[in-house]
Structures are given as C-alpha cells and as structure tokens.
Image (cartoon, rainbow, N blue to C red):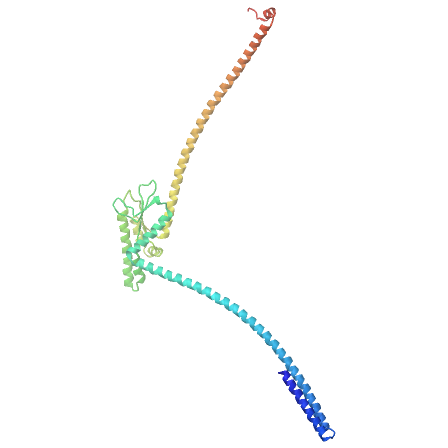
Length: 355
C-alpha cells in the first residue's frame, strides 16, 4: 500500500513537470517563475509524502511488532489460564468424587439408622439386639470355657449368660433387658400428666425386670448374688441413675445390679483379672511342688555322692594296700632270687638266725 501511494505521488509530480515543459515549449516564452515555484513545491510535497509514507511504514512495523508481542502474551496467558482451568476442573472432579463417596456413606448410614430404628421399634428384635451386644462383650473378655449362653439352671430357667468361675460351685448370671418404650414415652411427654404417667411406667417396667431376674435366677448355692441386669444403652443407664435412684436401690435390695455396656466390660475385665490371679496361684503351687521334688532329688544325689566318695576312698585305700603288698612281694622275690644266685656259704650267712 505504501509503494502504491509512493508511485502515485511520483506520477503526479512527473505529470506536473511534463505539463509545465509542454507549456513552456509551446509558447516559446520563458517559463514563469511561479511555475518553477510550483514545481519546487510539488517536489517538496513529494519529499514530505515520501517521509510520511516511511513514517507510516515504521509505524506499521512497530504496530506489527506490538501486535505480535501482544499475541504472544495473549497466547501465554491463555495457555496458563487453560492449565489453571484444567487443574481447577480436576480439583472440582476430585471434590465431587469425595462428595459422592460421602453421599454414599450418608445414604448407607441412613439405611443403618432406619434398620436400627426398625430393630428398636420391635420388642423381640430389641431384646435380641441387647443380648447380642452382651454376648459380644463377654466373648471378647473371657475364654470360652468360662461362660455359657442360654445355659439351663436347675429350675429349667435359661439366663442370657452364665459365667462359670473355676473352683466355685455357684455361677454368675447376666440377663439383658432393654426398657426403651417407657423412656421413649418419658422423652416425648409434653404435659405434666403425660410425664407423670411416663415416670410411673419407667418405675413399673424396671421393677418388673428386676423382679423377674431375682425370682428366676437367684438360686441359693447355684447362682452367686447379685445377679446382673444388662441395659444395652448408656443413655438409659444414665437416666436410671440420675432420675430413678429409688429404683436402683430397690434393685440392690433384691440382689440385682443394673449395669451398662461400659460397666459390664469393666466387670468382665475384673473377672478376667481374678481368673489370671487364680491361675498364677495354681502355677505357684505347682512350682512349689516341683521345687520340693527337686530338693528331694538333690538330697538323694548328695547321699549317693557321699556313698560313692566313701567307696572311692575305700577303693583308694585298698589300692594303696595292694601296692604295698605288691612291693613287699617284689622285695621278697628279689631276696629269693638273690638267695638262689649266691654260694651256699653266702646263702648260709644271709639266712636269718634260727633258719
């Protein structure tokens, strides 16, 4: 474009010069000085136009460089933005995965809560739940030979658990009870009358459980007292001790103790410690008996050693006597040999007097 403008300007100036020369030749008159001024002006215009064109070319070059630099910065910025956007999208995907897993866990937990609510709403399933929790605590704390689930007593009653202590004739009885309905009524009571009825219901239900355990399982000489009433809920156990101390005291008078899961675990650990001490005492008695037998064997070994020493001393004495007698025999044998080898006169002189 700049080249076209330059050619156009040169053409305009050349045309003007040609026209002026034609006019000058046609008239045969000297040229008008003003025409020369016009021609010089046209040349100046052409030079200025050339400078303008060059300046425009430099400006376009500068603009092209700046546009190129801007394009580079824009490309780098877009690349960086794309990288950051990809990282952000990846992080969002990971967070969505975590949220999805959490949602699944919440859904599963909701299902478990619904199942637990269904279990607790049914009296039989609630009793089975409490018994299973009690059995798990006992099974984790004691060896299998120290307990029996649903074991029969002499009166044909079957407590939930019998703990059999080694060397003891009487067992410990545990029975699981879950008085949830009366506490639910107490929790949902809104009026004084409803609360009064719910309090009476709690006392009545718990007293009934305590009475059943005492009458069915406390057999003198067969079951140790107190019997254990297991309540598989820490909150219900706390409510009993906080608001119904009279019921707890009545249970104690009936030789029944109410325990929660944590209290039962503590009791089982105590039984385990007692059993360990009993086993240690048994082992101590066994060790003492073995040490006594070992001392007896040591004494016998000492007696046998003394006898052997006496025999060895006697044998040594006998050996010395044999050696002495052997020396005497050798000496006499030499004398006899010397007698045989000497002359009769010498032999007669060497014979002891009286021979």
